[in-house]
Length: 168
Image (cartoon, rainbow, N blue to C red):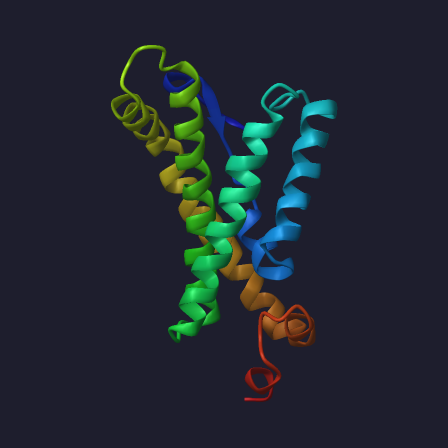
């Protein structure tokens, strides 16, 4: 469900790359994002074929890897599933929109300096992405915790949890 960001000339929405990166890894998550973006462009008139590459980079690559690295880093540092999941969802969402800000600034800057334009676009995303990032973090944490309670065996198979964590 896209939310228009008129001052940035684009829209915002939850991405889901944090949870997909946690569950299947960042590389497979990039493929999942690419397929989802292609379906959106072809069937829902959202995004578009001319922006598909940029969308895959920002959402698929940056979002997936940001979420995955944050989740793995927080788990290695002793963070709980809920805290690591929340931080991963938040990082994936906000990372996506920082990358999008960079792509938009690079595409429209002309002879203007890049950094001021990038900052203006990133600030334009704040009213929508601040709450959406928090929501996506909560949804990611909720999904990981739900799976750990209902189907911990799946998280072990997906290498999200170790077998000894499930037995504990």
